[in-house]
Structures are given as C-alpha cells and as structure tokens.
Length: 338
Image 1: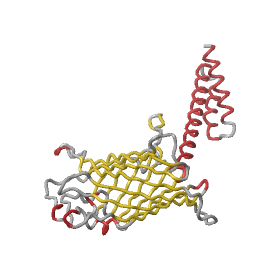
Image 2: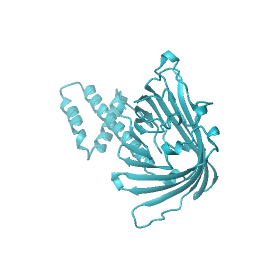
Image 3: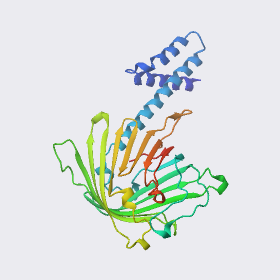
C-alpha cells in the first residue's frame, strides 16, 4: 500500500505541475478533490492517478503530433535530398478499401485494330485500389542527385467473388530522375524555387495484346513553395513531358494517348494543421486526395496512418482507361506523405 500511495502522490504532483496553465483539465481535478472525506482514501488516490495518466497521454499525443507536423512541413528540397535510408517515399502510398466507379470500362478500345478488347463479363463498379511509390538515390549529393523511382497502381475487383476477385488492372511506372536543388531562384516574390527535376518515365500495364497499354516520356518539373506560417504550407509541382512515339499505328497500342492525357500536369499540396490536401490536374482529369491523421480509437492512438479520401474525374485513372471518362470515389488509409 505504501508503494501504491507513493506512486499516486508522485503522479498527482506531476499532474498538478503539468496543468498549471491548462484550464480544460480543472474539472477532472475538482472531481477528485470533491471525493475527499466522502470515499475511502484509496479511491481518492486512484482518481488522482487516473487524471495524471490522462494528462501524460495527452502530452505524449501532442509530442507525436508536433513531430508528425514537423516532418510534413520539411519542404520539397529536403524531400529530394539523399538520406541514410536506402529508400524514401516518392508519391502517395495508400490503400483504398472501397472505390466506386461511375462507369466500369468493360470493353477497352484503341485506334489500333489489334487493341480492341472483346466483351467478356461486366466489371463490378466497386473495388479496392492501392498505390505503392518509392524512390532511392543512385548518385550525387545534396545539390545534384540521380534517383530511381518506382510507382505501382493496382485496381482489385475484390468484391467480385463470382469471378474469384481478380486484379482488373495494374500500372507499373519505373523512372530515372535527375534532381537539382538550386535554393531560391526567385527571391523577394514570396515563393521558393525548391527543386528542378528532369526524368525519363516508362509506364505500362504489363499486359499482352489486345489489353496492352503503355508509353514512354521525358519530362521536366519544377517545385515551388510558399509558407503561410502556422496557417500551412503550399507546394506546387508543374510538369511538362514529351512522349517518345513508338512508330507506326501498327505497333503503337495507344497512339492517341496525348489527346486524353495531354503534355503535362500540375500537382498542388497544401499542408495544414491536421493533414495534407493534394490535387493533380491534367488537361482532361482531376484527382483530389485528402489525408488526415487517424482519430483515437478505443483508447489507442493509431500512429503513422492517415484516413484517406480520394476523388477522380476524367480520363486516365488507369492506362486501360486512358480514353474512358468516368469518376470514382474512394475511402481508405495512407502513410504520411513525407
């Protein structure tokens, strides 16, 4: 009993010092004070101990939250600076448990006669969707770096048990990226030029005819940032690309792909107090992603996992759908963006 009493008194002292300037916890402390001389002393000590533990949990949660926000706000230049880790996060890594499409593409087509897919069975308009994206530095230092990037985007007809839940489509995108962090090229404008990238990107779905789709591109990309202080940070990544033409119509599985996906895109990320909002726009499409820290569930804080919402509208959500317009909405989880 002596050890328990000593622990409770220590917890009480720690609690009282921790909440000297916190008015929202006074009601809990008052509850314990009101219990004195009304209930056994061990119950009073148990009350103080519980309040102290709650305060410790809040302090730890705030510490983890500040660390997470600091990591998210570190900036594009730091994101593309080599570290001791062999692999780093590239694009968003997420898993959508539910993704609903307005118009599944049951008969993919292309101007190439060899790429007309015959109808087999109706696709389910709900599925799972996930993306894995990593990069690793190959050569260079803090200002000039050559990277290898890899992004895989998969569409899984998980809920179609009648057809053994097949993977409808998977897109593979390896690339080589040269990254240069110049510092600020536009001083005085309130915008920081954090990076300039140039890369070669191959993207395909790994299928055989008539379902094969793929293309190769060279691109250049800039990274611009504006810091709003405590109100958040905005990052813009405009990109222009040039497709490497595969030759004649007979050996090009998607000769009109630039008519639908254009010659570039722009990505915007806004880091705010509780998460990251991002948008990627091409000439005929828009994808919106919202990542928020997971709430505390059943008394346990879920760390390093975000609640993830996604909306897509337009062409090219996947390569097999490059010329099929639809919109989808998805819900799932994701890893912290940075």
